[in-house]
Image 1 (cartoon, rainbow, N blue to C red):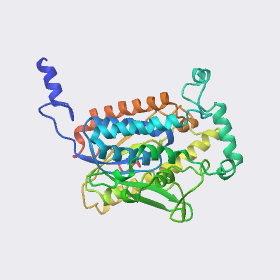
Image 2: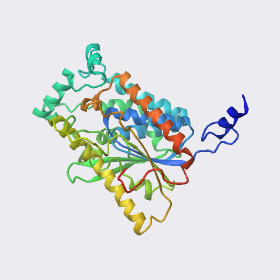
Image 3: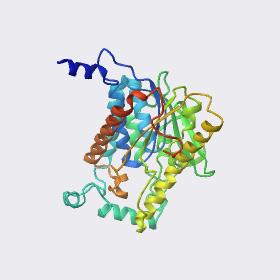
Image 4: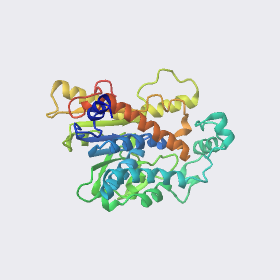
Length: 348
């Protein structure tokens, strides 16, 4: 190894070498987004590979599933265990839908790539949910998410000392309010509730109340990471675009943008409130905001991509997440523990 190579190796942030700085513990805020949560998997996989540790993790929907898988795997085998459990989660998601009508034929993939908006299976599902509720087309209340998390997650591990602190978002159907479940109260039903889309699944019953997707009221909730955790660094892994340059004109595009706004508005309001508090009153502690988002990676994938569970597609999103996380670490890795690399004021 020549001198220049040795210098680059030893000075690289968070990689091997004599001058290595151990990454500080950070807090994670994981948005929901259906199958797009595989992008988050990729980001987490890269962070774990680079030695990051996590104090608190707030998640909704797919973000809740990723949170539980990471924490469970960490308890069972550290960073390597967390990476293995995350992969097992998404492999199980894909395997469970092997016979799904959403699976594309080779001809569909040839003409439309990852976009499933023109898939007969998606068009049928979309039409069905507009004509009937899940209580009509799924009278038994079958929810495949329950089987997935029961197979992958060791819920006892989440309750043991040393687990990252989890904050799972749920939406109470009766009150419309955000509710959080922490490690001791997380069950398969809680994770299924956090990812319960009301047009696809029956509301999940917990302690006599009904719950829908946590993304409606907290996608994800930021305040527990600020007021219940000590780490100053908060990394938001953002799946929902905050900005769209084009004005949607077709009905599906309009509906898709309405959904994006609804699912991003909660975290945007929290960020704007934090900006005001920080500016006028101070937060009483250091707080550094960071963000990794999908940028344009999901822009042309279509509405149906959120329910596309083909393993090749999930692997593509994972690899994209890993690449984006690597770029973020290269650019901002040295700032973690020292300063913000994203702005509160712009609502992420």
